Length: 393
Image (cartoon, rainbow, N blue to C red; front, side, top):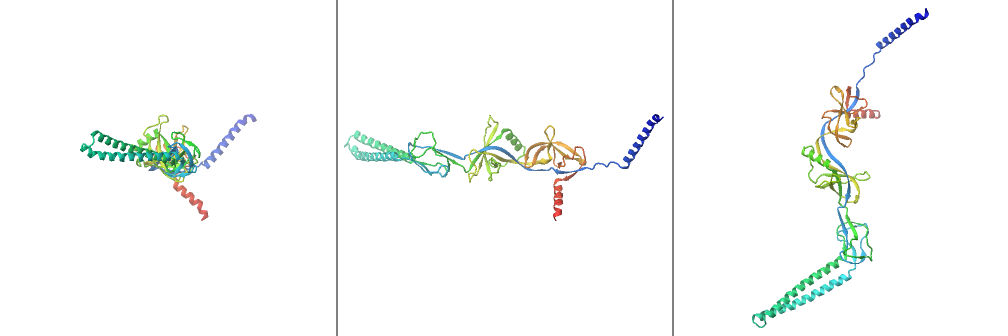
């Protein structure tokens, strides 16, 4: 009897438990989920300066390789290696003795030719009235005229020889052709130098101003040209673009340069175009051959859309996406088309429109299709600042 009544008791107990659970759920209903609060930024169009950062190297403004113009024994070096020199400053002295002798000899030869010219001229003048009176023959007079002309030619040749000897004598002093800083000297006093030697005595490099040569991909150059033609960029004018410089250690160079020119051909091996900028370098901080990064301001996009970086994530395919608060404060996920990073913001060219509200804080709590409470990021920051400063007041 007891075993037959047990199933009935189990049924009664289950029914009682179900009644208790039903009564409890009816007494305490589950509250509805409240919309989460997120910070948003309303996207609007604004002028955006387009800046491109490109790697490059510095190069000298001017370089002069100093070589001897005459052969001789080097007597003196008149500069300190690595020091700054000015144009026309003496650098070396070659033994002038043999060239001084050649100059003196040329002057003496010139004086002899001038004396011969005087004699020939006087003889011609004496024969001229005599030939008219038939006192001398025409042949004698013609010989006198020819002698005078030959003497004039000898004088001209003597003057050229004197000038050549003077030039060679001046070349015994080697001057700096430009102002700049000297390199190491390849010779010392007592060395024998020749006019045809290939070895450079010293190199003078002008460092102020200095050039920076950078390369820009041809694809970027083509894109910028299309944007200029479409009116998306405002050109600052030929050879008027400003260029900023970042040094190899990451520090900023304190002076701004200007873009000088760009090559008219594309390098076939790299597919790039070379640009040259000129920078002032009064302190000689920039030296030739340094690796730098140049930021070129190429124009202004008048209708640019900027989205903060913290509001842009990437989906599983690696594409940039953002959460946008749409109609009814419902969250939508948009796939963006980004151009470049400008500061802490993305320049967006597709995927959003002016007036869209992009979620920048609370992205983890917001999900597509859900309703949220949007608060402008600037307003939320102001409330947070007031809340943190109130206890100190």
